[in-house]
Amino acid sequence: MKRVSIITAEQAAERIKDNHFVTVNGFLASVQPEALTSALETRFLQTGSPRNLTLYYCAGQGNSDGRGGEHFAHEGLLKRVILGHWGTVPAIAAMANACKMEAYNFPQGTLAQHYRDVAAHRIGTFTSVGLETFVDPRLCGGKMNDITKNDLVELQIINGEEQLFYPRMKMDIALIRGTFADEWGNIVMTKEVSPIDALPQAQAVHNSGGEVIVQVEKVVKGGSLDPRLVVIPGIYVDHVVEAESAIYQQQAFGCEFDPSICGEIDIPIETIKSVPLSAKKVIARRAAMLLLDMSSEAVINLGIGIPELISSVAAEEGIGDYLTMTVEAGAVGGVPLGGIRFGASINAECYLGQAAQFDFYDGGGLDLACLGLAQCDGQGNVNVGKFGPRIAGCGGFIDITQNTETVIFCGTFTANGLKEEITSGEIHIIQEGNVKKFLSTIDQITFSGNYAFKHGQKIMYITERAVFEMKEDGIHLTEIAPGIDLQKDILDQMEFTPIVQKIKYMADSLFREQRIGLKEMKRQEG
Image 1 (cartoon, rainbow, N blue to C red):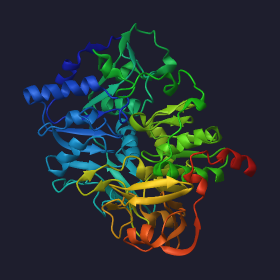
Image 2 (image 1 turned 90 degrees about the vertical axis):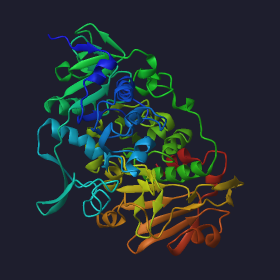
Image 3 (image 1 turned 180 degrees about the vertical axis):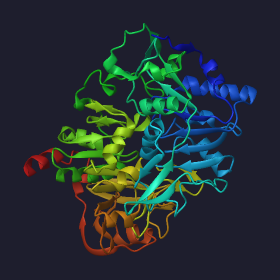
Image 4 (image 1 turned 45 degrees about the vertical axis):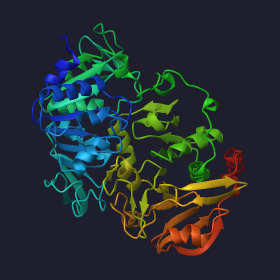
């Protein structure tokens, strides 16, 4: 059995040459190969090399503070970026806005699945995900600035159906983090929140003739790892780097190791802290009420931001175990976490690779999805990806919203300066936000209302003061919150006029400190 090459992070950085195509595993603040990306950044700052890299990753990388993907945010180091989620790398977004490199944003699931097509030497990836959104080449083909000219996605007709086609890309370097490696290069990820893209990424780069470099906590004796736990077999791995500092192996940035989010133990759900009452919690509560309509076999996805709170509300209300919640990072079951640990789940039943999770999502496996709401127009289109110079990226938003039967968009009614008071079962606007979200025209189409209508999806938009529903004749205002003035607080804060026919009040229990009683309601329905 061959022994794997064990090198330092600095030696690993030397393996990356000018014009290389570099791909990195990780999910926001978790599973980040920080020793490797830090060493690459240091090498570039000290020597000016390597140059003109193409950077490719699916999920977000980092925490908007110089870590993760922002180690690449230097002029000259990058020639092109192909990213799924941009929100945690504002330094790279600033380079894109300044036209310092070519920039693309594609759906997270499509990029994850593309690894497998590269690994198998297929001609590329065919998918319906992204049709009628900004990814569609009839709009902008995922290009994020004026110097990005090459078309990396094409529209094709297959058996009479429209498909987006991503030609196969040759990948030179994979930077991956695992937990332990043995002397033969076999990699386990037993302390990580999920394998994310590790296996297909390693296969793609290996079969492209490139080099797979894996950062680990420790190298152990050959053959001592449980083969059932090996995520990447040693035949794919070229080099292993032992992280010199424990800070490079944190389960998530700045977080202590938690065995309940990697399957080592289960903890009582009751120990999860409740979220204080706020406008965001009101939105999460109203969305959680829709769980009452779901069967015990329903499968749900919760997005980043306000939707993260829904799992906390469900746990607080005692219905967390009535449903199966999932996150695109790969966890099935358990309670999804938010903030710095978004992507992880407490007490998960299973940890899939990201591509497999998106196969399930793309095939309509979800019964309900709750995602963020940044901009919405009168056609029901939603933008969460780009607002003027700010690039958040689509992440898995398109994959999830386009293929789920019921989709709930959650967000405050306005933003930037919004102040509200919640008291005695009512909500009152103290100071209106400076940024309207319900607009005549949105900056980018991340979700197509027309596509959803054609495919028979149920679409709702939940805010702290109003609930809307997309119907055959347009966007209907269906509920308002107690204490809200219809004209001043809703209609005057919108750039389009919703259809107003029959309106009811949102339940006043949403606006009180005590539980709203979802468990009792669920029992009565049962």
